[in-house]
Length: 154
Image (cartoon, rainbow, N blue to C red; front, side, top):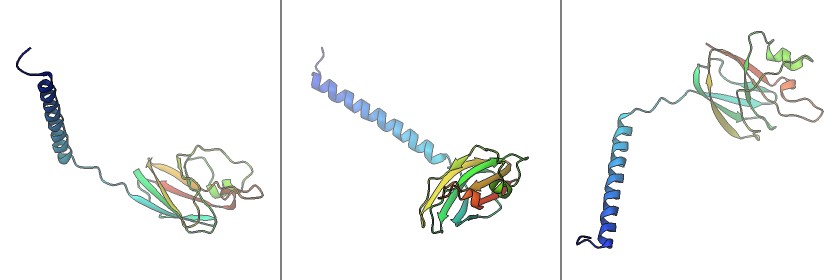
């Protein structure tokens, strides 16, 4: 072996490792600093109360954050569903015995009065609905009591 002891070799290896990690971190930091962050997605504020949703009707396409605030006195949740063109209005569906099942795109957990929650989703052009599927005694859900809202994305 050479004049280096095993301790000296270990110290040299650690120093080289630290130098290489520092170089990688510097490269990542400088690369990250030059790349701009994507813009924040628009936020659609939705309020829930017995038995309705309130929100702006102008909702853009692309990534959107839906922020739900429960201003009611009961628990509510929000489920976003894409609506087929041939589906009757949700208000009609809610009162009909012949409803069609539509798969949800996104949903929140049940939200207590005064609570706030959100989800992000990507919207393409088309027709969408918000419904509350909280069950109530007697078998009617909030949806069946008219807690629905429809909107179109251009």
